[in-house]
Length: 155
Image (cartoon, rainbow, N blue to C red; front, side):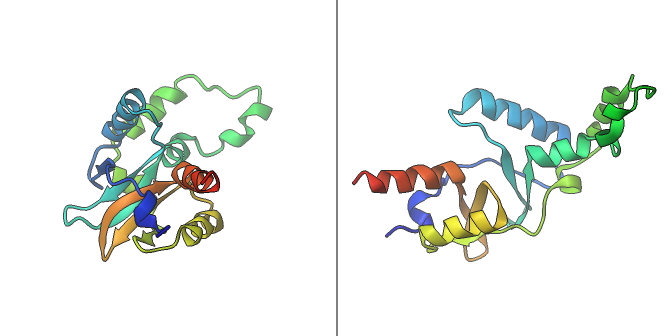
């Protein structure tokens, strides 16, 4: 049939918006150690089962990056001692819901694979939640789509 249902992963980890950010970082580490694939983001689902956001490694790194760090390389007189500790202290106080990306792009289980590809390319995203009605039923990673289409070429 060549739809999202055919290529989605139905086993995925998710987080609650109230999950401490430090716990989500540990989950990234655990998944990297236990899965054959590295996980770069988690869906954030509220207690009612609704998708409310996605937390990616990029979200965490953007949060951790000090505001004016892009110009520090040009400044030889700035004292950066203790900066990592300050970022870590801030991170310990945050929850997933504080920094997750919202306005999530999704696809329905019956969406054609080329429409999935177009949506991912248009939005420059590497993962897309698959929904049936209002509930998340899976996720498609860009690599899943790539290898699915590559497999179809070989047939």
